[in-house]
Image (cartoon, rainbow over all chains, first blue to last red; front, side, top):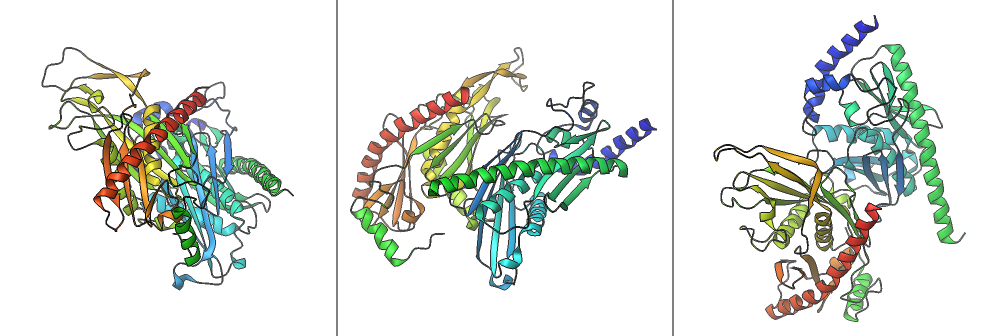
Length: 279
Length: 286
């Protein structure tokens, strides 16, 4: 039975790579046959992943507030080799007068640096993938911003990927949360995001690029940790429901761990601001 | 986008006329430069430069390619600049493309020499592997993360730092291939060759505000400029390229005067940058 399920995922993986690989082949050339060989070894018999982590271990995270001094709020967020910068401008006057409303207008733009991936690529801003991610980030952040407190104003969130090694979506959301907090924008709660996947019949937390391109299921989750609400949920490929529950639970744990870290960073930043003011 | 009141404009112009600028600098003084190397591990070389609130990243990637037919004994280098919208909301969408193109062109003029490759800061013949067959293509990518004026000088410095951080893999060419075939090569994973970057020039931009000119202008000061001249100078004191921006015409004698000033300033910039790059490299290794 277990064997059958394995075979099924392999097939699903084959059908699914055609879509994923189209956008990824530009980044790194992994032929499907190599991928199948690699697929066998995502988790070693000792229970270690390709980069030496345990299945439920997250990559090292690092955050820094105030990376772009001209912006109203900004942050750098790193998850392993994935590194993104987020800058927030606003709340400010609405630029396009026809969009004025009783709620704050939240806008977001996601872009990748030319050097962010293994193979150099040159592509224009606004391709389908970045438009989709911009939308996802915008919707996720909008859910936590108290937009009704900021009528007739606009908030711009810009995220720039410096290095991509899987989980850029999550890293962007975490960076955007920090930048919004740095800009002092009223929020219901911090939004944090983390991904989890399922490979070699093991649930894995925080997939890196190689694991992500394996074609297995990849669940990206965003939560409001204090309110315990899910604001973002995306999954590709297929999974039995009971396993999905397991994987989702793992992602939630990851999100909560990130939330704790972000809170620490914010607290430290606030303490420093206090110190500089001489309070 | 800089919105200044009339009073602020007068304050900036008056300060420059009296040789005391808003941040306390003199007309020919640079802001402190901080250099960080090896910031992008996937690239062959990278550097991040910060001057005040200006923040740029440059990365160098080397790929194997074919030399062009006209110059079979030289490798190829191209420079692309991208203005991230994190630097300014106006760069959103295609908004930054115009500035990016202007910066890329100016840097190409200043660093790469003419079409023939003569006078380039990088020795293009060192990029050749097999003449007429294989060479290294260097892709230099610059990213403006935060902008507070003087982007060109910062990008020039970042590229210089990134090039001195660059390691090009050693390549073994399989012997015994005939002249017509593309020779087989073996790219080493362990052995890297370092570039000679002592010839890479630095760029000094002189911005003319009122009757005087200043170096390393902030974006407020740039908004008051009438014209700006970017001069690239190498260690020997040779001028490697000049670009002029801004709509107002300049007297030829003033340009010559600016060039001699730029040459003088460049000496300090080169020595400052060299020591910063050396300490950044030392820090990366430790």
